[in-house]
Amino acid sequence: MKTILLSGAISMVIALLGTHPTIAVLRKHKLGQQMRLEGAQTTPSLGKSGTPSMGGVVIIIASLIGYVAGHWFSHEPMTASGVLVLFLMTGLGVVGFVDDYIKVFMRRRLGLRSSFKLLGQAIVGVVFALLAVRFPDGYDLTPASEHISFLNDFGVSIGLVLFVIWVLLNVTGWSNGVNLADGMDGLATGASILVLAAYVIIGTWQYRNDCTLALAPNCYPVRDPLDAAVVAAVVMGACFGFLWWNAPPAKIFMGDTGSLALGGALTGLAIVTRTELLLIILGGLFVIITMSDVIQIGVFKVTRIRTGTGKRVFKMAPLQFHFELLGWAETTVVVRFWLIAGMFVALGLGIFYGGWLQLPRLPPVTRS
View (cartoon, rainbow, N blue to C red):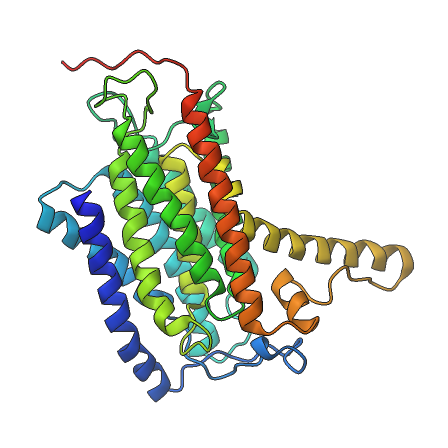
């Protein structure tokens, strides 16, 4: 618990103090967001051209420093699970950084081509998946298992190939989901904080009921649950510090650097804690926002093929812009979406705890 608090506090302070000079540097070199032409005339939140972007770099750096420093001060060893989640987060952040670099430095509004972005996500995801099923501990537990999980692993092993594909689906889905939510000041950052807080609780609870430590009837066969909580804490702390400057009216945006990195962190945490399907509930807001975009594009393409004129379900997608065009103020949309995110997190944690009450009585692992 000491490592969780210390690491989270360090990352928060670094992000809080480090974001301001980052804003100054980006403004000095006029490295701001490029205006999106579609809807920029009618949707205020899309017309904030010139606001410094690429703030996700601060989140990543603060998280890495907080993780290393927290373990150093508490004399606790770093684990394979924690390092792999941070690798996934940082790797996807690098992909997002390339995209932001093209937008900001090269003044190309569309940034990295979608095919190259997906390729970058796939490379990072494959490396993570292959490494996550290695590094067994003394109880033969690896950071990930070749099973699909909800509250715990279930069913039979799906094999390495299908597991890699499953990880790729999660990596691309969640990184792009957070990216779609990052369209209004503080929306993605605040929602991510809530989900990360849930993983601090889940990791801590799994550690208290770890099959390798606690001789309890209900336990979790997870390799490094406490360090997963530490990772969730450092990323949450970094987001807290960043949100001070990203809250409406935002002084800086996280850009694809931050949104892809946060999506990677959530994916990695779900995989190493064996809660991949539970993340769909915990991150329900991101799912809704993503589905609104899928529905909008799907309906438009189908109706254009059938009638020659594409029809739209929403005034604009993703969903947050639909409500803004209905007349909601941006801060109203953000706060209400935060509330929705909080309700999904509460529901997910309730299901997680209820599942613990129903866990089968696993035999405790005996120490050698």
